[in-house]
Figure 1 (spheres, helix red, strand yellow):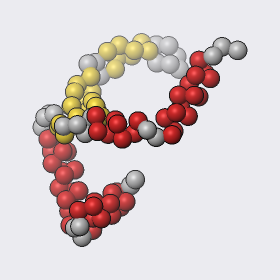
Figure 2 (cartoon, helix red, strand yellow):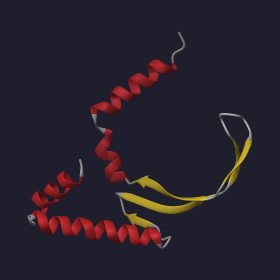
Figure 3 (cartoon, helix red, strand yellow):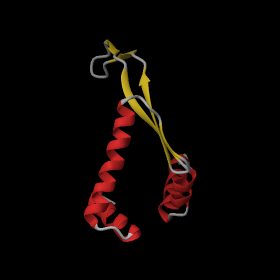
Figure 4 (cartoon, one colour):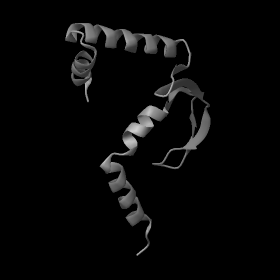
Length: 109
Protein backbone atom coordinates (compact mmCIF):
# COMPACT_ATOMS: atom_id res chain seq x y z
CA UNK A 1 0.00 0.00 0.00
CA UNK A 2 1.53 3.31 -1.04
CA UNK A 3 0.74 6.85 0.10
CA UNK A 4 -2.14 7.37 -2.34
CA UNK A 5 -3.73 4.02 -1.50
CA UNK A 6 -3.40 4.86 2.21
CA UNK A 7 -5.15 8.20 1.70
CA UNK A 8 -7.94 6.53 -0.30
CA UNK A 9 -8.37 3.86 2.37
CA UNK A 10 -8.45 6.44 5.16
CA UNK A 11 -11.03 8.42 3.22
CA UNK A 12 -13.22 5.37 2.67
CA UNK A 13 -13.05 4.18 6.28
CA UNK A 14 -13.51 7.58 7.93
CA UNK A 15 -15.94 9.15 5.49
CA UNK A 16 -13.62 12.15 5.12
CA UNK A 17 -12.70 13.56 1.75
CA UNK A 18 -9.41 12.46 0.22
CA UNK A 19 -8.03 15.96 0.76
CA UNK A 20 -8.94 15.86 4.47
CA UNK A 21 -7.47 12.36 4.73
CA UNK A 22 -4.25 13.60 3.14
CA UNK A 23 -4.08 16.49 5.61
CA UNK A 24 -4.66 14.09 8.53
CA UNK A 25 -1.98 11.68 7.30
CA UNK A 26 0.51 14.51 6.78
CA UNK A 27 -0.24 15.88 10.26
CA UNK A 28 0.27 12.44 11.81
CA UNK A 29 3.54 11.80 9.98
CA UNK A 30 4.84 15.28 10.81
CA UNK A 31 4.03 14.86 14.50
CA UNK A 32 5.82 11.49 14.57
CA UNK A 33 8.81 12.97 12.72
CA UNK A 34 8.98 15.92 15.14
CA UNK A 35 8.83 13.63 18.19
CA UNK A 36 11.57 11.37 16.83
CA UNK A 37 13.64 14.44 15.96
CA UNK A 38 13.46 15.50 19.63
CA UNK A 39 14.56 12.02 20.72
CA UNK A 40 11.12 11.10 22.07
CA UNK A 41 9.74 7.58 21.95
CA UNK A 42 6.55 7.23 19.89
CA UNK A 43 4.20 4.57 21.20
CA UNK A 44 0.85 3.70 19.64
CA UNK A 45 -0.39 1.02 22.02
CA UNK A 46 -1.06 -2.34 20.36
CA UNK A 47 0.14 -1.01 16.99
CA UNK A 48 3.68 0.33 16.91
CA UNK A 49 6.58 1.61 19.00
CA UNK A 50 9.32 3.79 17.53
CA UNK A 51 12.32 4.34 19.78
CA UNK A 52 15.14 6.66 18.63
CA UNK A 53 18.46 5.19 19.72
CA UNK A 54 22.17 5.85 19.29
CA UNK A 55 24.29 3.04 17.92
CA UNK A 56 27.72 3.20 19.55
CA UNK A 57 30.80 3.71 17.44
CA UNK A 58 32.92 0.62 16.99
CA UNK A 59 35.91 -0.81 15.22
CA UNK A 60 35.41 -2.83 12.08
CA UNK A 61 37.20 -4.10 9.00
CA UNK A 62 37.10 -2.97 5.42
CA UNK A 63 35.84 -6.09 3.62
CA UNK A 64 37.76 -5.23 0.44
CA UNK A 65 41.23 -5.02 1.93
CA UNK A 66 40.83 -6.26 5.51
CA UNK A 67 42.25 -3.07 7.05
CA UNK A 68 40.76 -1.92 10.35
CA UNK A 69 38.39 1.06 10.22
CA UNK A 70 36.49 3.11 12.79
CA UNK A 71 32.71 3.00 12.37
CA UNK A 72 31.28 6.20 13.89
CA UNK A 73 28.28 6.37 16.19
CA UNK A 74 24.96 6.82 14.41
CA UNK A 75 21.31 7.49 15.18
CA UNK A 76 18.62 5.01 14.20
CA UNK A 77 15.05 4.14 15.12
CA UNK A 78 14.14 0.83 16.73
CA UNK A 79 10.79 -0.37 15.41
CA UNK A 80 8.63 -2.77 17.38
CA UNK A 81 5.35 -3.95 15.89
CA UNK A 82 2.43 -4.15 18.28
CA UNK A 83 0.08 -7.06 18.87
CA UNK A 84 -2.74 -5.88 16.57
CA UNK A 85 -0.47 -5.54 13.53
CA UNK A 86 1.43 -8.67 14.45
CA UNK A 87 -1.86 -10.61 14.61
CA UNK A 88 -3.00 -9.00 11.33
CA UNK A 89 -0.08 -10.50 9.41
CA UNK A 90 0.01 -13.78 11.30
CA UNK A 91 -2.62 -15.40 9.11
CA UNK A 92 -1.21 -14.40 5.74
CA UNK A 93 -0.45 -17.33 3.45
CA UNK A 94 2.93 -15.95 2.54
CA UNK A 95 4.08 -16.51 6.12
CA UNK A 96 3.49 -20.22 5.65
CA UNK A 97 5.43 -20.21 2.37
CA UNK A 98 8.38 -18.47 4.03
CA UNK A 99 8.37 -20.97 6.87
CA UNK A 100 8.40 -23.85 4.38
CA UNK A 101 11.22 -22.31 2.35
CA UNK A 102 13.28 -21.75 5.50
CA UNK A 103 12.83 -25.39 6.45
CA UNK A 104 14.13 -26.44 3.06
CA UNK A 105 17.20 -24.24 3.45
CA UNK A 106 17.90 -25.63 6.93
CA UNK A 107 17.98 -29.19 5.61
CA UNK A 108 21.47 -30.38 4.68
CA UNK A 109 21.41 -32.51 1.56
